[in-house]
Each structure stands twice: as structure tokens, then as C-alpha cells.
Amino acid sequence: MRIISGLYKGRRITAPKKLPVRPTTDMAKEALFNILNNQYYFDDISVLDLFSGTGNISYEFASRGTEQITAVDANYGCIKFINETAEAFEMPINTIKSDVFKFLEKSNQKHTIIFADPPYDFDVEAFSKIPELIFENGQLEDEGLLIVEHSKHTDLSYLENYSHSKSYGGNAFSFFQN
Image 1 (cartoon, rainbow, N blue to C red):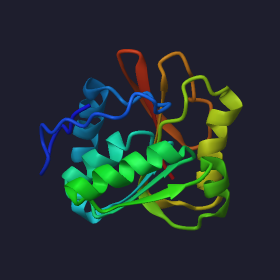
Image 2: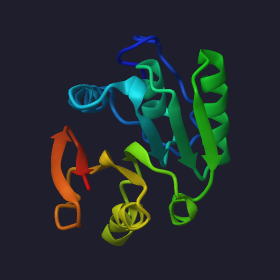
Image 3: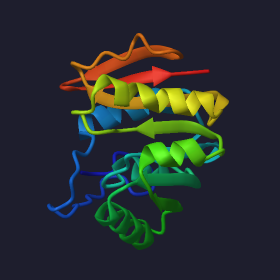
């Protein structure tokens, strides 16, 4: 994976093969950040990266100037890798090793952008629990955006606060707003 833009543009980051991850493709990530770039000043926002895996999305936000980034993942290896990479690049990424659903149930922090990249094999009930918890607990700022990455075969359009979806190859992003 590589960082698309910003201070670390073009830098390649290689995650250990043993991590149980499926990083967002460069093509999909670039398209997503083109959309976000038109809506937000990256240095003015707070980001929550759920199911953060390799930290791919967090690194992109940090490279573009975001100072408030929290990455949550249940896998110790993923958290360790994100910490090591963030330290090497001097990126302001705060990591939390936790089950994402337990974290969402307890957290009361608000964020401008919440990005969730759960396993594609989640059932629809697990996918629907993500926006449900976020909106129930008021974790998204008024002008904020929840983005859930999933397979293009998963339909989340029936969920409350759903706005729209964009597909890139086999990936799709569903957007949710207050």
C-alpha cells in the first residue's frame, strides 16, 4: 500500500503478511479522498478509524495534515504495526486495542469523519450495528460523515441516516450523515 497524497505522498508501507487484514485498495482510497478533499479541510477535523487493520486510512489522513486520529482494532499485531509506523513517520495517531462494538458502546467522543472497514464477510446485522451505535451515541459531529467500506454486493441503503454509496471495483463505500 502507498500513501496517495500529502506530506508522505508516494511512500510505500508494507504490512507483515501475518496480519488478518484486507487493506483498502489504492484506487478506492484515492477516489474516497478525492470526495473528502472537496468537503473538508483535513487539518481541521477529527477522525475515528474503526477496524483499522494496517492503519492505511489513518496514515492517509495524517499525511494530509489531520492531527486528531484514533485507530481502533481488536488485533494486537495490527495495533503494534500502526504504532510502529506512526512513530517512524511521526504521525499523530492514537491507537486503541478494543473490540470495535465495545468501543462504540462506551465512547462518547465526537468525530468529523468515522471510517469503518469491517470484514467483508460480516452479516448484515453486524454491518447495521455500526451506524446504529454511532448515531445512538452521538459520536458523529453535525457536519460529519460516517463511511462504511464493504463489498459491492452488500446493500446498506435501507439503514437509517444512509446518504449514498460509491463503488470502485469490488469495493463500495456507504456514506451516512446526521
